[in-house]
Length: 120
Image 1: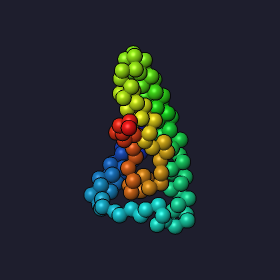
Image 2 (image 1 turned 135 degrees about the horizontal axis):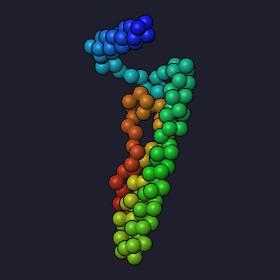
Image 3 (image 1 turned 135 degrees about the vertical axis):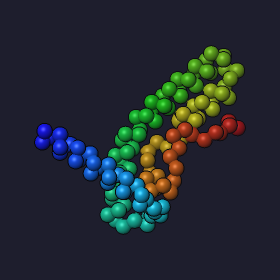
Image 4 (image 1 turned 45 degrees about the horizontal axis):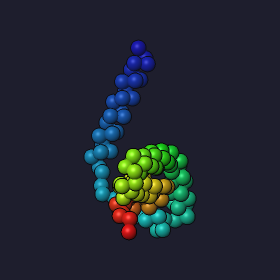
């Protein structure tokens, strides 16, 4: 009975805290990475390193699958669709491979897929 009371009180406190916090949300201006103090930069680099460690396997898998799809497109079309194969490979292999600290401060955007670029 005591554990149930503690659980119910904890859920109520957390719920109230969540809603009170949500009612005071302001649009905060985040500083750029270069505007932070040394301690702030160290924290952003640490956060960038940790998030990159999680992000990079997904980007690598995407690039690998894009390379396979590009190669299959090139082989199956008997090189007549080399432009399509190039576009697939370009979009898969380009884009951001790591999370820059300015992405964490919302001053840059994360580009998982590379830009549309035509072969000259």
